Length: 532
Image (cartoon, rainbow, N blue to C red; front, side, top):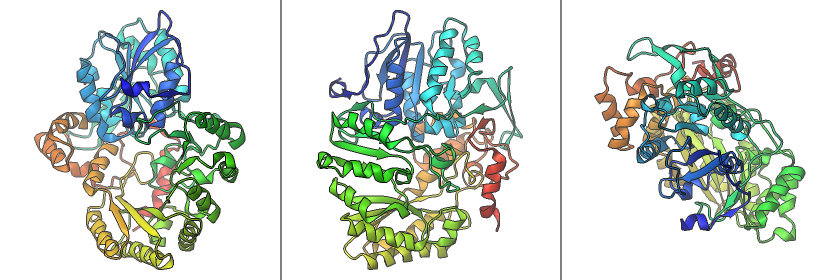
């Protein structure tokens, strides 16, 4: 409980009324990780501010006093492999891990967050209810609907909740497969509920900011401010852009600066978050705020920025506020690949950003890259090596880092139909050989982790039994292959989910869950990569 005592709250929790709904709000990881999640903080404050709710927090290593028989048990899920901790916490609370095995004696188990909004199907059997989209309005609508059927039978509760926009009740949708090892044939509602559940989008003018600051967070004593939501660039592989459209930018004067000033009352460390922070139309005004003498002692952290916004002025401001490097996503050194994925970035802009970063006083740049993108060849990987070596010659003594992942297809993006390229593993080694031997810090993400991530990002409900097995086997690719072998004949092989490129006519596991753009638009956006 000492971790809770170190918290500086920036909201006032309500005193629950006598008829308050008892709710456990869980993050399926440690307190340090969970309390650093701005999404978890925001939802917790939203729930705990309401007298109609009695909210207790639960982490894998810490918990507040929990109700004996909670009405609701909610999980915020932001990392795929945390499903293991969700199942463990359910067992710890004596709640059956499968929704079908729960009775009125058990809480309704709901979940939300980016993983479940993108594709909840591999985890669908474990949840009674899944909330799709932004929580700002959706959570209140969910709680209000639950309040009205709180005393009803469980089946009546689920029917009522399934009619709330953005509230998905998996058990009320039937999935029929072409055969046990084949693709999905149909997904249909079992009762009079919407055939498609639409992701909910918050369109208000105020975005999230920290509701708690603590030295126990993974980023010690940081106050986080969401500067933008979504990204206007729409790179064709990017979940952070396509799933969260439209691009939203709150007013610097009316929203962001007042939020920052609330944080500065309790800490001098500020984090500016968003997929494309420097593309806020008033970002220069925000920088000017931190350039004042009153902010000289503020430590500033900033999320990944767009390459053509790295000016000498930006670098200077960040350097003056204890930031040593800036992170930009270039994806590939190949202009051909960048054009194919809709990365609007010219080669000379990368050189200019690097020069500006050094001139402004930063010590280095971390680039994000990717291998295994559709149509990529070895020559494209060589182009990435050449780009980094040319940059090193341009800025001697400046630290250059390339973090590199393998392409993972994501639901609701134009590249959702593509499989993982098995040659990506070899291409990571090619980059390593070409860069490390020339003094460039190369940090590859595990290819095997990309395989697991793809399995979960493109999986369907048949994976639930597999996930139950793998949590006991471990989180290696070998463990997943062992589970597939044990379940042979009951679901498709791993290759179907991970490596196959699916036809655009195929019914997808998430075809009944509607994102911001219709599937026909995604097909159109995918066409440049489909052409051989």
